[in-house]
Image (tube, rainbow, N blue to C red; front, side, top):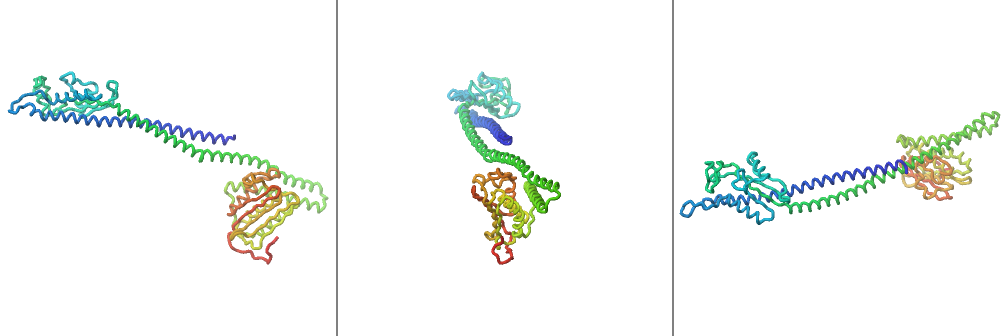
Length: 490
C-alpha cells in the first residue's frame, strides 16, 4: 500500500474521530442542558403550585380577618371574644391540610414565636431575613425534607390594620389571647407562610422526559453520524483513495516513461553518433553511402526531435501554457507533410503507407501545427505497431455538416478490449506498447490536442486484425475547397 493511500486512510480516520468527538461533546452539552431544563421545569411547576396554595391560605386568613367583627360581636351589639381569629384559623386549617395530604406541609412561622409550632427552621429563618432586610415577598428552593425531594416556598405575612389589636401598641401588654403585644406597626413583617411540596412525581415525570429526549437525541446523532460517515466515504474518502491510486499509477507510469524515454532517446542518438563516426572515419565513402548516412542521420534526428517536441507539448499542457494558433488550414497540405515525414519510417519497416483526402474537404479554421502533430502521432504509432508486409492508411472525409472525419487504420497487432479504456491516458503503455516501445505520451497528446481544437478521438480495434483511430474535428467555417475535378486525392 502506497504512502499516499495510507495518508488518505489516516485523513479519513482523523475526520471520523473529529466527527465522533464533536458529536460526543454535543451529546454531553445536550445532556447537561436537558438536565438543567428539566430541573427548571420541575421547579417552575412546583412554584406555580406553591403560589396557588399560598393564595388559598391567604384567602382563609383574610376571610377570618374580615369576619372578625361579626364573630366577636353578638346580635345585641355586645363584644364577646370567641377565640376565633385569623392566626388560629390559618394554623388549624394548615395543620389539617398537612395531616390529610400526602407529604405536603403548610405552617406559619415568625421571628418571635408565641408557640413551638411557630419556630422557623433554617430555610424559614433565611426567608424571614430576606423579608425583613431585603424587602422580598417570597423565597424558595429545591431541597430534601425527611429524605424526599421537595420544593420549599415561603411568602411574607405583613402586619395589617386588624393585626394591631393583638400585635401593636402598647408593647408588652397582654392582648385578648393572653400573649404580650410586640408593638408592631402596619406593614411590618408579622411572619411567613411556609409551604413544603413533594416533587417525587414531578421528578419522575422529568426523568422520563429526560430519558426520552436523550434517547431521541442519541438516535438523531447516530443518524447524523451515519450520514456524515457515508458522505465522507462517498465524497471524501473514496475520491481521495481513487485520486491517490491514480497518483500512484501516474507515478509508476512516470517512472516507466522515464525508463522508456531513456531507451527511446538513446536509440536515435546512438544511430546519429554511429553514422557520424562512420562518415568521419571513412573519408572516401561513395556518394551513395554518404547519401544513406545523411538519410539515416536526418531520420534519426527527426525521430528524436519529435520525441522531444511531444514531451515539451505534454509539459505545456500540464502547465496550461500550450497556446493554439488559429487560422485557415488546408488539410491537403497537412496530410502531405505527415506523409512525407512518415514515409521513411514506413519504408524502413516494410509497411505500405497510403492516404486519401476527399475532394469536398473544406479549408477549416484550426491550428495547423496541432493537426500535424495529431496525425503524425497516429500514423507513426500505426507504423510502429504494424508488422512488415502490413499497411497503414490515412483518410480524411467530410462528415456531418460542419465536421471533418480523419481516420488512421492499420493491419497491426491490435489492442485488447481491456486496454482500450486506458489507451489515451498519460504515460499509458498497454498491450502492444509494452512490447514494442513508445513513450506513452503520443496518444495522450493526440486526445488533448483534439479536444483543445473542439473535437474528439476514438478507437476501435481487434487483436491480430488491426486498429482504427478516428478524429472528429469541427471545420470552423463553411468554405469549400477549390480544386480540380477529381473526387479524391492520394
